[in-house]
Image (tube, rainbow, N blue to C red; front, side):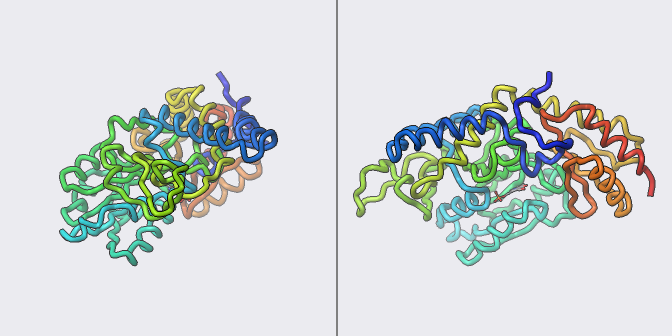
Amino acid sequence: MSFSNLFNLPAGPYFLSHSVGCLSKQSELSLAENFLTPWKLSGGDAWPDWLQTVDLFCASLAKLFNAKAADFCPQTNLSSAFTKWLMALPMDNFQVGKRKILIHEDAFPSMGYVGQAMQQFGFELVFIPASESALNIQTWQRYIQKDIDCVLATHVHSNTGQVAPIEAIGRLCNQQSCYLAVDVAQSAGILPIDLQCWDVDALFGSCVKWLCGGPGAGFLWVNPNTVEQLKPIDVGWFSHSDPFEMEIKRFAYAPDAKRFWGGTPNIAPYALALGGLQTLLEIGQNTVFAHNRKLAEYFLTNLDESAVQPIDLANVGGTLCIELSAPRIAAISQRLKQQNCYFDTRGNVMRLSFHVYNSLQQVDLLIAAFKHNSGD
Ligand SMILES: Cc1ncc(COP(=O)(O)O)c(C=O)c1O
């Protein structure tokens, strides 16, 4: 069954869902119905409808990740959510020598920039070198020591496609009493994620990639067991347990993740993203994942063994990150551009993503381009 009619698709084959997912038709409707129309019809009285839209957004995330809606808080993007969460951690740990933030060098640079900026508040930043595989639990075991305050693990790494063993990292963090936060930017909407099976403190994500919800609809999930330890600094009336109390001398944190919300919230990005989320939930997470795997397997099995380095699909996310020599990457890129394909490269790596709107015929184009340029 083809789901491509549910999306607005650019003219050429689109393999860029790791960057921006295609606009779902439901997103256009949702923006009109849940944001523009209430505003047109009732001006400032649109707030109940607008807030219900955000509730529906959080409820959809809850369904996707098998969690509770109250434990999600809208955020602009991942780095901002990471900053807010780090600044909310209890400082007691500093007194017992736990002040290190641990990040793998293959994490998305923006998250490393946050770690660097946090040094001005007394945190120390430790990088796991890129030469030590993030796939490997022994790597994490070597670095997760008593002096680590929190670990940022990237579920799927954007330039290698590698999947970190989050469940096992969670056990290590538990043993060393440190916080674990997970970046799901590249996995949300493509890899099944069940928060009941992960022992993590926070999750940072956005809807711009596989969730086809556009930029600006980020989110933070906070573990309900640890949320009360967290005291965000960047607050506003929507972080209050009763936003309409309006008593300037009395601030009380919301009991759940909404304490991270802040001042008057954005609505439009969440109205848009809700459409993408609803479309993908209707298709079903397992169907999206199975389709991705079917196309990836088809691609890999139809190439000569020597045409690309071996890729084990058990260890990668939705994107095939294919290392190629400089002449090959140039030649294959040129051919794919002639065929109006959407894809990107990072250094000597070509990134190709298969979503529900991609077909086997489109993968045939890729196979032909790789076979046509099979040697150096
Ligand atoms: C793994 C990962 N984390 C985070 C981001 C984006 O972070 P932010 O939302 O702060 O721009 C990306 C974007 O490509 C990513 O691939």
